[in-house]
Image (cartoon, rainbow over all chains, first blue to last red; front, top):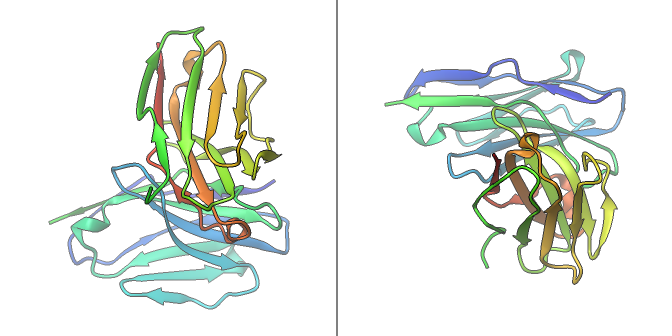
Amino acid sequence: AQKVTQAQTEISVVEKEDVTLDCVYETRDTTYYLFWYKQPPSGELVFLIRRNSFDEQNEISGRYSWNFQKSTSSFNFTITASQVVDSAVYFCALRRRNQGGKLIFGQGTELSVKP
Amino acid sequence: GAGVSQTPSNKVTEKGKYVELRCDPISGHTALYWYRQSLGQGPEFLIYFQGTGAADDSGLPNDRFFAVRPEGSVSTLKIQRTERGDSAVYLCASSLAGTGNTGELFFGEGSRLTVL
């Protein structure tokens, strides 16, 4: 069975703090894809990153970075120097090979960044 | 339009009634997806269209739920004999053919359905 677990339901930080959002996944597939999406209060999900199972390189994009570790089945997301605009619900998701847009989402982590 | 448009943004109905939710995807996007998001949960896949046909409807919870996309653009999600458990935000997403495989879906703001 495929499953994504985001154990942190809510996180609250003060602006400029670094924060890491955890994601643990379960799959028996050897080929799969992992994603992070951001859901601001307006409701629409915004794509942040995709990583395939054969690429364990960490990625950095501005203040965002992602740490993919197959050995622990984790795909964690770090925001450096957080800002109030980062406040949102963040979802980690898993997709099986050849399943198009059928994503399996975690329960989400609500991040609140206070000024 | 610039993004995925969903109407209505809010719908309140009574148990047992019929409901239609509409999704207008980004122009040129051939793939369209419906997801359902209950309060405090992540979105759950319902159905995926490639063009006019449903490529995968494995997420539809039961036969009260049905979706169509007759001309390969606008899609309608139809719910018959609504139940209180159907209350959720229904999200629509679209993607260019093939890029859906990258997982980069473009989501609308959702239709919030409340069944009293």
